[in-house]
Length: 86
Image (spheres, rainbow, N blue to C red):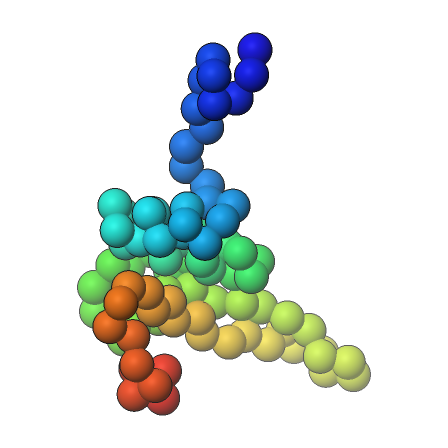
């Protein structure tokens, strides 16, 4: 059996074209995929989350508590520097 001839794998993008296709077909799945690409944890809320799509947890040297940062995913054709600053 040979991929592309006998079967096709769809789902997880491995190229820029695949990521664009996922964004166009399923924006929420694109957000989930993007958060997981940086080993983040996806938030379960789809609305009312303040734009936060996930969180990344990490430890700092000589710090006893776990730290976290918010992850916000933007995609599509109309993303501007203003979106990134917000």
